[in-house]
Image 1 (cartoon, rainbow, N blue to C red):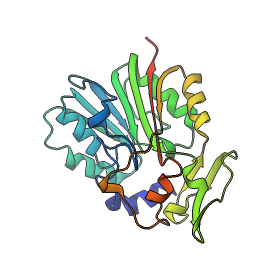
Image 2 (tube, rainbow, N blue to C red; image 1 turned 90 degrees about the vertical axis):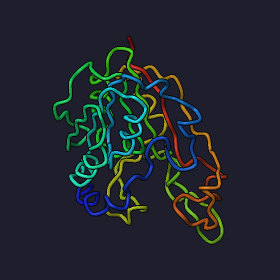
Image 3 (cartoon, rainbow, N blue to C red; image 1 turned 90 degrees about the horizontal axis):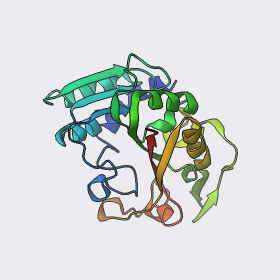
Image 4 (cartoon, helix red, strand yellow; image 1 turned 30 degrees about the vertical axis):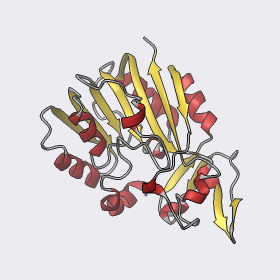
Length: 242
């Protein structure tokens, strides 16, 4: 169901929410440099979409660019976007819960920009990522903050419309109930990372306002008014133990 929806909607997300951006109302990699020096690094993008985050990595000196995505159309687009890169590019059409042929203990950096939350099995996906990384390798991901869709705008007020505490798969209103996404608490992401062997360095849910994201419509999915109350995005920076 989710794959079918992505095939229909891929064009709408061309180049959106890609590095150096981490997500709505969030920090920017150009300013905060969570990745550090990317030169000569082998990098893997989980949920690579249209390839723009990999393009960012390649333009900053990454040695190899690898990615996987569930959508056929996204992989086709990413191959076009990355066709001018002067380094090795390897893309797989695959769900993140499966290893489509990626090497173990190979990557210096694995990352996922607004994609990891699509997984139907968080633990299995994180075990895969842990396996892909070299000892001491870096893992960074961003995703919609799990409190964000618990709150909606109605009759001039923001109200809680769902329980934050109840986890599990549910239809997503932002996609007009055409996809199913698992709601997980922030603590679930943190604890599952730890259980899978990661060391967490930083958790970021800082809200950043700029001229580019000012919204006059409080009922928008990502609105300025809502961001003044709660974060839209969270980021976690972690390492595989050396």
